[in-house]
Image (cartoon, rainbow, N blue to C red; front, side, top):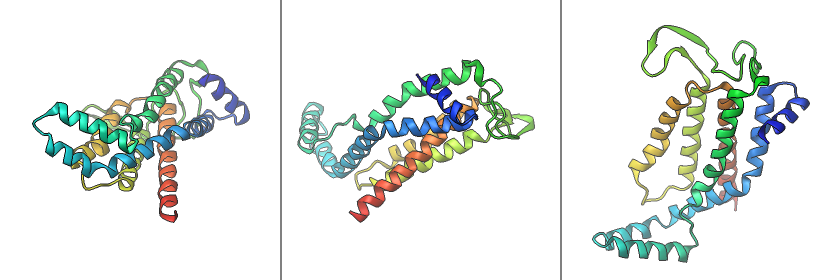
Length: 220
């Protein structure tokens, strides 16, 4: 399905990089209902953090009673604890599908996006090569993983700024913002350029969506 959609966009705009961006926008539009639910769930979880802390303090020696009280709170507040994960769960098969497509599809071999920079969407782009190897990275310096990581950190910080509460765990917040981003930086450092174009664009669209949501809340 992804290949058919990608080829359709390529037929309209004969540049696979642009086709990937258009595919990203389409996928983002299709996932808007789920993304909105995820944002709403995050906001609700943030709002009830003080109550969650009270329950944790009250039943710190009784895990069973604590779980029951938490379940009751979630039911009363209409919160689905898994709601914040739904957009990611639905994007994960798309991520795997695109990874396979951009790795194996013959038509993408040698497909250029930006001359002089992204000259083959099926392999990592390289802006320059060092005369020595960096630990875990090698000698080739790729710019797209840096752009991806920066966009991921910015997306998470904007989301957290919209849902900050006094009960938030600083350690968990730091790990989700920086730890996960750094982890994915190393995981995706040698990923195909096309995949990183998709994922970076997806992050930028998420940032725009969150900024729009924040503005709407303020004006509302």
